[in-house]
Length: 110
Image (cartoon, rainbow, N blue to C red; front, side, top):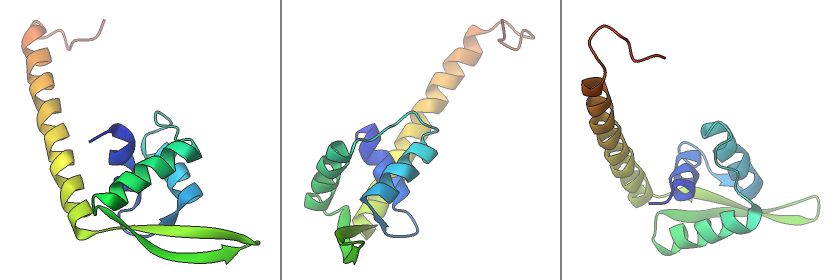
């Protein structure tokens, strides 16, 4: 799973969101590391919808423009949980190796 897809799924946990809402939530969740452009976002959403991980929740007209809201599906929630577990396991492996590399008592800061 790509990092943008991971954060889009994470942004949809708990409530449906429209495109710009997803972009802002992804920026906040990633602490600014992932900056989705609208074209990139809709490419990710199309793939997630095709895979059944996200679904169109509703469409609304606001200020004369169509706003589509997307929601996380049950398979999307399961895929996100599996990916979060995979990332956590990978981080634990890296952390163990880094701890083993540090001499005892140094704390690892330079």
